[in-house]
Image 1 (cartoon, one colour):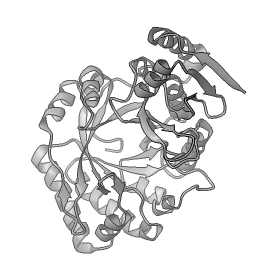
Image 2 (spheres, one colour; image 1 turned 45 degrees about the vertical axis):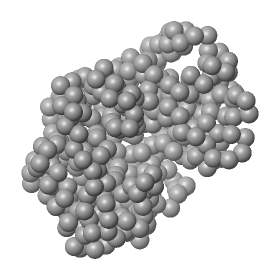
Image 3 (spheres, helix red, strand yellow; image 1 turned 180 degrees about the vertical axis):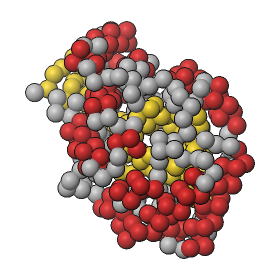
Image 4 (cartoon, helix red, strand yellow; image 1 turned 60 degrees about the vertical axis):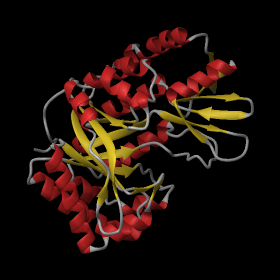
Length: 351
């Protein structure tokens, strides 16, 4: 069954959401137990605003400035001292992310070249350590996506070597991994040996979204049963104290035919409001959506995010990582606060 509820106004939506999440059933598993982590991006001014206004709710902020630049293992990117200072002024630690992005695509070939060349792997690790030394970051997040299954062993060894070097310097390592539910719906999940990665790294950030990609078919990006299945698969292999649930604050706006357009929570609601659309609720996916002018928009709101936070708390995961700061509506934070633990100054979950 699909329930329908109509947007009356921004204020009306906020009141409805608060009433929905403030029930005893919704709060029964909340103990403010989750580490709160947010990704910052420099191309969206709203991301800066989110750190400035809500950074005090987060234990870490992850900056996303660095990428592998070529097959030799060099890094490209720049340190943004302003966001580091702002996040720390709000009480957050700051970790920097390293990805295999080439333009807007995660390059399998680039990752393969670095992971399978001993010289390139050594150089990549040295480059990461250099950034750590130069700018005194609090930790590293390694986000190598779209890996070839054949590179599973090489990736595991790279993570082990990087973790050993970071731990020797008193710094933690987080690894971003794709969500997996059996049976796997994508081949790259086989590149990630969760058991071995969980032994080496301090945290695994499970990217529990993009189950439906922009190319379609149209549907929710993170249906709740799939998210729960992915959690179960992960915690069977990794201690729950090392698992962070990745939660997207984005959605997709699909035309009748063709590729979907990524939209933030705030933009999705804005489009519905401007077009007079009805927000409908997918009971199975526990996700909102609407149709407008022949287009279908599946997105996240405070209510659907609350369902995912409740899962994370119920399974006693370490925390939640929000992709990305600046996409949210203000009511997201009043909802999330019931689950996020107060800021703390621990460096690692295992040290």
